[in-house]
Image 1 (tube, rainbow, N blue to C red):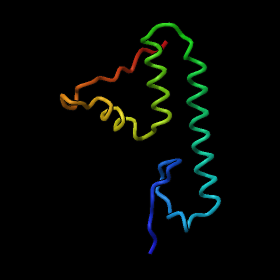
Image 2 (image 1 turned 180 degrees about the horizontal axis):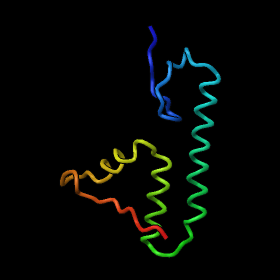
Image 3 (image 1 turned 60 degrees about the vertical axis):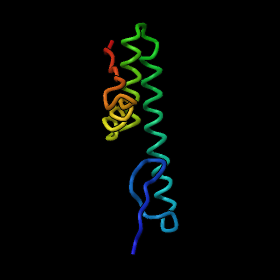
Image 4 (image 1 turned 135 degrees about the vertical axis):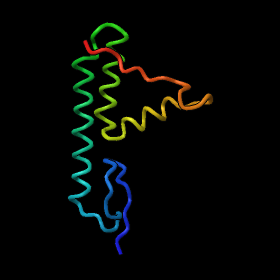
Length: 96
């Protein structure tokens, strides 16, 4: 019987570490590096634009790149607090 765990690098389900192959680990590392590089390049390209509303947009877009399918879940948790689910708000900003 196979057991599974969540890869800490790419968040994909994979066979447990004792059954993993070298290729699976390299694939996860490559995926993580490519995603990180994309977010960094985006931040460098647009991060110097003046205006807090534009910087909020850059941060939001970088988070979308890094979070992938988990973006909405992350934002929901970020807005939760002592006063309920809408204690805080997430500002998506304005594209330049």
